[in-house]
Image 1 (tube, rainbow, N blue to C red):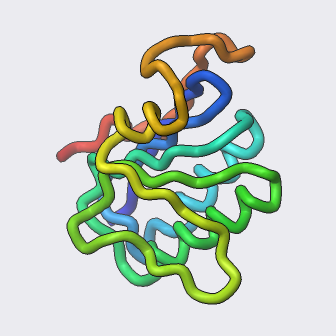
Image 2 (cartoon, rainbow, N blue to C red):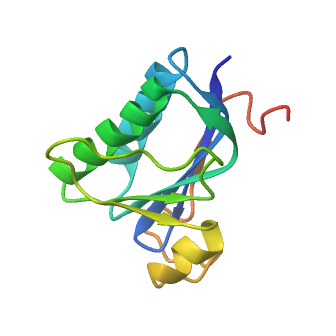
Amino acid sequence: MTIEWRYTMEQDLGVLSVAGYLGGDAVHRFTGAVGWTLARGTGPVVVDCADLHGWSAEGRLAIEDAARELAAHDRTLHLAAIPADGPPVPVGDHPPIEVHRDLTAALAALAVNPGADTSAEGGQEWRTSGWPAVQ
């Protein structure tokens, strides 16, 4: 099983919504999605996990790797609506990952008005062909 993803731009940040299960089979796809956010956006990235059914140890490591990759580009990673098994536990030298109860809380913490479009890209959105994922 893999994940489906959608990347949207809000005011000076990106929202990467993921659906499915972030296991070993999906890590490559998730890493590609993070690369997509780096190429097309600026500012913090909120990973909206509301439709994520869970993650494996490999999936948790992929989240940590994403935080490192974003930090290397002076960007931060935030998680919203994480699976019930909890957030990744940072190991070693790791940039902070803020966890929010849901996307609305994450956007409020980042002082963004949800749905407002002031991005230079005109509110563009990219997604995998399977989005929205079959629940």
